[in-house]
Image (cartoon, rainbow, N blue to C red; front, side, top):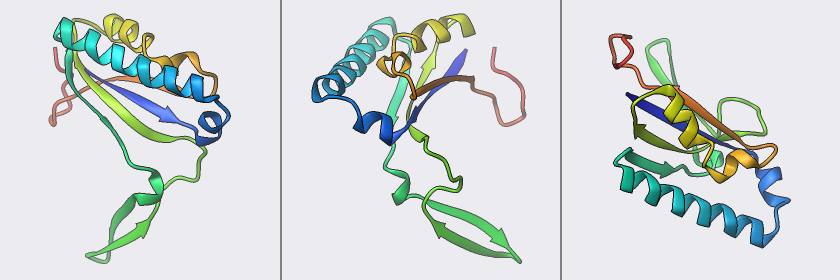
Length: 123
C-alpha cells in the first residue's frame, strides 16, 4: 500500500526554534530516510520551495489565469513529503510518528493513502 506523508510547515514556528533544534530536525529527517531505505519502504521524498515561489493556475473562459504565491491564505504550507510503500495504514502512521516535525507543536504530519486515477484505493 502506498501512502503520502505530507509535512505541513509554519514559518513562525520554525523561526522560533533554536539553531540546535533546527539541526536536530535535519538530523532526524536524515535518520528517518536511512531507516526507510533500509526497510525498503521509501519510494521518494522531496522538499518543496517556499510558497512565494508558487504559481496558481486556473482556466477561465478557456484561457489560463496564473497568479503568484499560494492559493490559500494560511500560516501553514506544504513543505515536503515522503512517498512510502508499506503494509498498512497503521505502519504508515507508525512511520509518520518518527518524523521529527510530529513532535513540534504547530507543525503537522499528515498520512494519506495514494489512490489510482480511477478512484480505487490501492491494495
